[in-house]
Length: 350
Image (cartoon, rainbow, N blue to C red; front, side, top):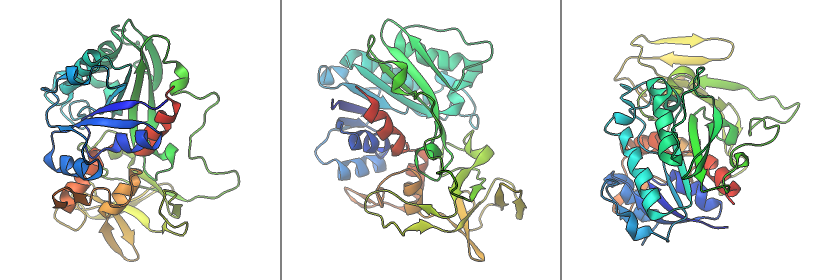
């Protein structure tokens, strides 16, 4: 059944690209960044766009929305940040998503955030997230939060799972926590779990795929040196075939991914599994994802970053007021949501 979505912390609509591909419909956005709002207005003409989640009135959407979706700012939860947790000015905006979902009487709730949400404040912040969504405050397990689980509360039942974008057909390692919650017994574990599941982008038996990783300090413009990006970077097949609509079957990535880190030395680091390059600031590609192309090193283009997110080509290139600068496009890609994952989730909603 198609659902009406109220999209909070919308960015350029990464969550909505996937949910709409699954047959759902966005009725309103809320996004504070003016450049992101330009892109939303360009792709969704006539759809209301609020600019402040703290002043959004849920009564306007009572009975009109089925799902409140959003990836509240993650800077205070990422291991790369100061770890202020849900008391932080930015990540604390999560509570407004709870307020809006409750007061609009939306049946469903979708939340996305960095893997560091599971460990922020020794797990207490994730317990608070589950409390805000379900109405039950669970104890933090002695061994910490696992990568998946279920909590049943008086408001909703919440199912969470830690996904890696590379399982969903994009050549990027990007680990994110997704929570789907629904009222009563509507939301079961099968929403995010599959019996005898395996990584969703597994190579067919007998197929050889060379995988190389680029270590970066910023991922694709992610929330600082994101917890997973800084450790393992992106996994990109050297001959990855793009399958998104509108792309030729022969359109492939054939370069070797390389990247820059915070290390000020310029050196190539190689292991049997990882090839990377580090460089000081100010050089081409410094602070941005980069690739080795023939004998040169270049940064990824905004188009390539969009493809890493599973978005349509040139999605961030144009706003309602004209072209968008590349600096904004890199940031938007880094702060976005991989739409392949939300499409998969959207197709599993009852």
